Every structure is written in C-alpha cells, then in structure tokens.
Image (cartoon, rainbow, N blue to C red; front, top):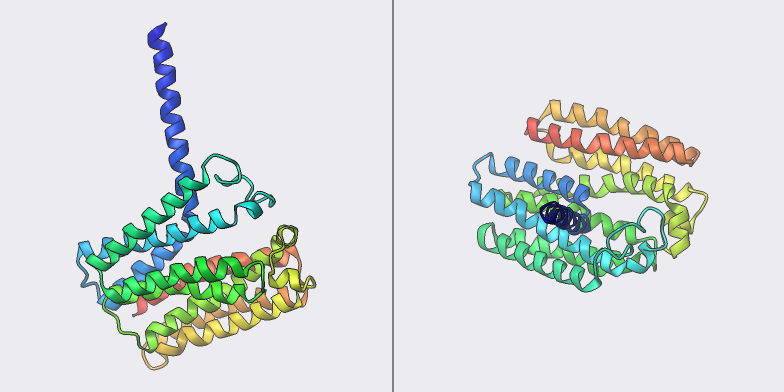
Length: 298
C-alpha cells in the first residue's frame, strides 16, 4: 500500500513539475519565438553562405531565443492586470496564479543576461546590440504605448522586424540595402497581420483600454487602410535588393504580394471577423513562403 501511495505521489510530483516547466515556457510566447528564430536561422545561413560554425550558429539561435523570451515574459509581468480581464489571456500563468510575479521577474532577468552573454561571447557585438535594442523596444516602448497611442503597432513592428537583422549580422552580413530590405519585409508584414488580430480581439482591447487602431476607429477603416498600405509596401521592400539579382525570386514574391494584398483590400472594403480571419491566414501563409523563397533563391 505504501509503495502504491509513494508511486502516486511521485507521479503527481513529476506531473506538477512538467506543468510548472510548461508555464515558464509559455511565458516566452513560444510560437512567436520559434518564428523569430526561423528568420534568424535563414538570414544567418544566407549572409554567411553556409560558412558558419556550429558554436556560432547555436549561440545565435539560443541567445536570440533567450532575449526574445525574456522580453515576452516581462511583457506578461507588466500586463498581468489587463491579461486577467481578457478572455484570450486570463489563463496565462500570472493572471491564473500558477506563477508568482517574483518568479516571472527572475526568469526574465536570467534569460536576458544569459542570452546577451551568449551573443556577446560567441557571436559578435553587432548582433548583441541589435538583440538588446529589440528587447528595449518591445519592453520599454511598445508595451507601455499600448495604453497610450495606436502608434504602438509601428513601434511593435520595429521590435518584431529586428530579429532577422540579428541573423544577418550573426552570419557576417553588412548593414547594406539587403539587410534593411529584410527588416522592411518583417516590418511591413506585421501591419496586415496585426490589423487582423486587432480587429478580431477588439472587444478585449476595448475592455482593458488598449489604444489599438481598431479601438480608436471602431469602423475598421483605418485598420484596413494600414493593412493595404503594409501589403503594398511589403512587395516593394521584398524585391528591393533583388531587382537586378534574381528574376525567379522577384516573380515569386510578386505572386505572394497578391496573397496579402487581395484579403487586405477585402478587409478594408468591409471589415468583419471572417475578413480578418482570411487576412490573418494570408499573413501566416506569406511569411514562411517568403522565407523559403529568400533562402532558396539567394
């Protein structure tokens, strides 16, 4: 009997341990971090021509992931009171009470230091500086701006675009036209992507007082315009470094541009939840296909 009871206790402890580990992992917003790391890896591969060392590659990936995870965790710590009020976020570890605020703060500090040290020691100074700039932009600018101005989307897009530049510099790439065009693609991609999300969750954002384009203008007209503008600009910056370089790449991204532009126009003409969902799906199709095209054609 004691043996069976001990087994149950041990099993329960292991289950609780895994659940707790999962809560810490969820602080990093893993789906977002994974997508960022894919952009880092591809940019590093292209910039280096595949001539990277395993230590530098993994230091760049792990370091960038830790810095991004730290920023997301601190974002959750700052937004805990508002997450508790929104349906889609109230089950996060902090508002649900599964983790303490002090634990999240410690986790954010440790991952930031560890990621920065990895980048500084095993990658290079440029990548480290860009990583810290990305962290500061997200935590110190974007997060508090969400309650003050709809311009937070633009600032957040800067933070979301910088990881690809980390990969580029980690691979030895120069801060040239191609580098900034890559940043431009990730920057403008976020406009149609986030306008779709902002429309779908506008009720939650209104509830907690977030100043999103869709809450400042509930008609959705300005959100639609920004989605269309972002889609058009996305095509322009994506072909900018390749006009005289790779005809196949230009053809592919021109087709992909239509994948983004058409649902953006539909959303702009008649904002609705179905239109926003179509636009969101289009953005999720666009980015991986563009990354593959960039990787294969360069």
